[in-house]
View 1: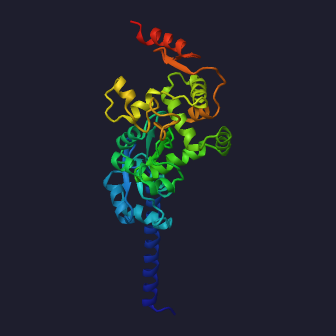
View 2: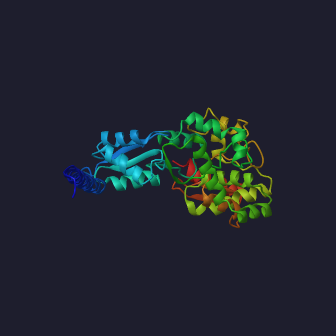
View 3: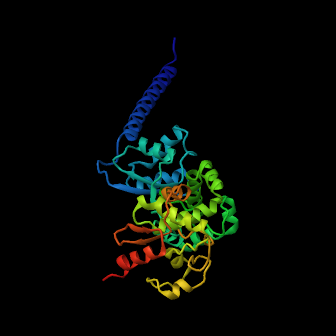
Length: 339
């Protein structure tokens, strides 16, 4: 015969187990509802940042404080259940409270961080690019330029030059906020190396030019171009002049080499001797005067075949090309000196 106390104990234990099962079921239901239910229906984006070394507890607390989740305790438990507490990636995220916690966690694990756009137009010099990088909050201009002239850094990115001028490839880039100046520059130069193929390098060698010389010539072509279709023809003029040991006499090289340039080229500027002034030196200048795009690089490598030695702007983005100096002088009077 069962003892009455044992019977009571069994009933009590059964009651406790039943209550535990009910509580567990309610908790599981609450957790499922939590991970699948967005905090709000508003789609307003919220910038959320995870700093390196931040704990799961801090991340969960910040998510709740910013209104992205409703319960940091449940989020903490869910992350641990998913064994993802060490998988959260530092960075700046663009999240929204209308996204359920499960999807928020996916974004934090996958590192879908907010990216900052940096667009570099063709033909800018490194000073101008440095200002764009600073404006995009990616890198102070002074640090950017310091690295561009750092010989040790230049060697690490495999550029054979005294600076990175010419090798900061013009393109649209996307960087996370934590990107360093070095990484920004490394990406730009890596893109240049990707564009400037071995085929192009061999073509330059066949023409008798190093990579640096082709980039230098392409930069001049880029700065002289108003109409993109004229690049190969402008290139032919410079190639023809180089073959004849004529000075290139390119105005953009005068401007680049003159730190006192005031916006209008005068005779004193043309006479000023700098490592870039092609009115004073023969051959190519010391280095690139800007950062050329693929079309300018290709034009430098594959110039048109032409008899031209001169060109002058027609003030409509195109140029008039001449074979002789007398013909060129007439064109200058017509397009530049006429009222």
